Image 1: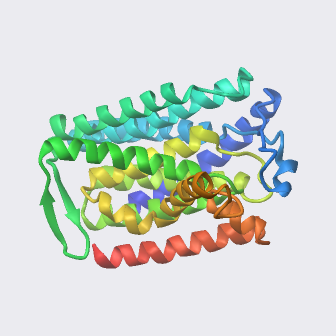
Image 2 (image 1 turned 90 degrees about the vertical axis):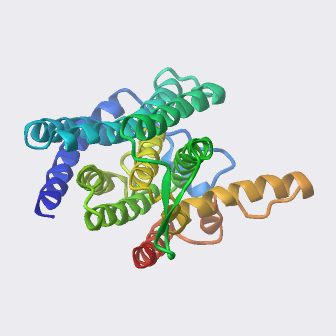
Length: 325
């Protein structure tokens, strides 16, 4: 536990330093946010705010994962090797997001990465990570069932598509949650903390260490991302964090816990689906705007209130999740 606390403070400090260096560079490159014309009117003033700030967390991951790998290479080579797939799935999703952000914001291609290419990239990372868990690490195809506190072994032909669905679904959900200053980073920090707590209880050091690094990174990033945000994480950050959460949950053989602790991102995703289906059937909107955090904004909530309420709800859900594992 002492090591995790040290990693938390070190990661926080490095992220703050990286933020102070990176944000001016993003400003110089004119990598600015592009706001939707049909979005909340209050968001129009954010036009031009530096985005793609997820590179800060990505650089932190490279620095800290390299440090941890080298440290454990001699004392505990097994732990060192087990860190690698978690780093891969986290940075893998982040790289896909970075390419999308780079095309949109640096190359000024407003469409960014083509949806098909983006999906292929995310799918490739998901498949490789799942196969690594099953074929290289041999963790098995059993998943933990919360409440019942038992394991269910899935046939491999069912486990692989299930794991891929968890990775893609979680990543998309976290991406949709990133629409208000500090919302995605705040909610994600709480979820990561819950997963780290589970990994400490279950004695899975590679998850607890990398999870702690990301918590420190998210907290450091929040200094620049809280309202009024000085930088946005972009797809680089949201896809990276989504990959980390789902990758950690699968590694712990506990992906079903995400239904509880990541319910806020899940609701964000469902709100978009409901909005699309309802509009196609009736020509009207079910919500004032989707994802649902925009609905609350248009209902009179300030951004700070949305972040606080969604984060507190996530905290309560994570406590409930800890009680049923």
